[in-house]
Each structure stands twice: as structure tokens, then as C-alpha cells.
Image (cartoon, rainbow, N blue to C red; front, side):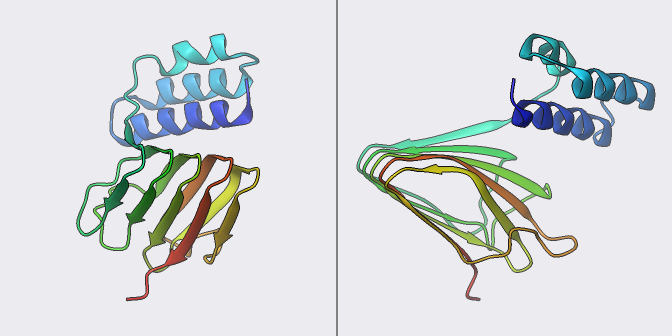
Length: 165
């Protein structure tokens, strides 16, 4: 089990509490079990009944583009083998403060455009012969969107920048 699995479980429990799905006693119990878990088998029952929305986009050689007022899920996984990916979050509908984007770019190129005040953490990106360029702060301004980018880019390119508008 890695730290990201534990963090994800804690996030799901906190989200369920914020949405009114769990009471304070249940929140404390689940958080304790998540934070003291030593293996993935101990984490599964903590979040088994909680929704985990992950949207997957994929392309082989094509272009994946999301712009304008599009609904951004809490978790987004993008697979692109030879194509281009453009995720413009600057005018998107984002009902949560944190977005996790997992990229799998073989030879592709991805551009992520953030709204003003947003921050992007790219520490979870594994780049072999790839290039990662992040022109935004790692932490968002107070109240800004917090974007965490992870994934594998064997030969791909990733550019993250703020909106020019």
C-alpha cells in the first residue's frame, strides 16, 4: 500500500462527511481505520460503500479536447498513445476544490490550462524521456483550485499553465 492510497481513502471519507453521508462518529471511526491501515485490504472496507467518480478519456492518435463550460470530475484519467490532449479548466464547472488528473501519454502531448489562483502539483508524474513544464505555483491561492497530476509519460510532453484571459 502506498501513501496515495491512504490519502485517497481519507479524501473519500471526508467528502462523504461533507455531503452528509456520514455522521461525525462514523467519520472519526473511518478516519482512524484509514490512517492506521497497514495494507490495502484494511483500506477497502473503509471506502467500499462510498462513491468514487473517475472519468476516463482515451485516444489513439486523435485529439482529446475539453474546453468551455464542461463538468470536471473529481478524478480524471486520460490515456493517449499518439495524440494531443487539451484540458482547459479556466471556464469549466468544477464543484470541488481538488482535482486529480492521471495521465498516460505514450508519445502524446498534453496541455492543462488552469483558472486564476489555481495551483498544480506534478510530483506524481513519472517522465522517462518526456518533458514536464509547469508554469503555475504548486499550491493554489487561498480558495483556489488544487490540481494534482500523476501518471506516466514515457515519451510524452506535459505543459501546465494559467489561463491567459
